[in-house]
Length: 219
Image 1: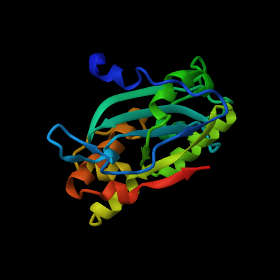
Image 2: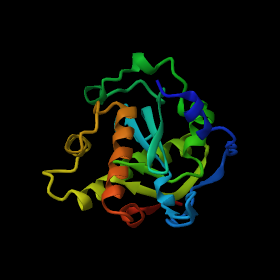
Image 3: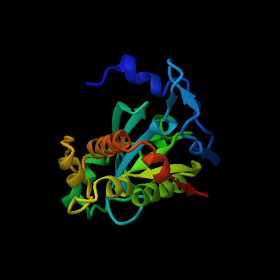
Image 4: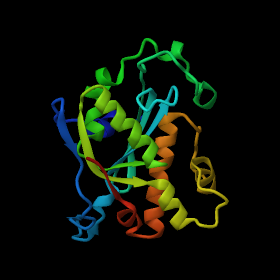
């Protein structure tokens, strides 16, 4: 179990955005902090890795979200939520194992936003195949009229291709196995953690690679 004395600090003191507001993440400025010795610290190594699982092909059908919070290049918190999608149509159970019966009693994304928002609002995001996960996120905040997110996000697929070009492919399970990162594939929390660990390992091997890979998303 994660130590709440350490991990509770991530969300504490972060105000929740009003609905229909701009949920803006910072632009990349990789060298704007110093450590205790006055050495530059990569601001890029502060981000939240996310992974959504969806019930079907609709991007607003998220049924699970996992996150891994990274501070100073270390994963400091892992968390996940089951989400009740708008309908009971589940065509991807064969991928992630989740069914309507398992999530029917869970809150929908709008009801969960007060818990989820502090981890995503005002933070740089990361995902393995960011276009998919950000597409789900954008669909959800539109569906529940939460706001409009824009900011920098990092795709760990692109980073993995740059750092480990010798791999036969750069799917999450392939890269995680290569780096000996534990993974329960398509468990949202485990996938988010693997994404975060991949990015931290990549930055250790090639400093500055995350800043180069960061891209602007949103409106």
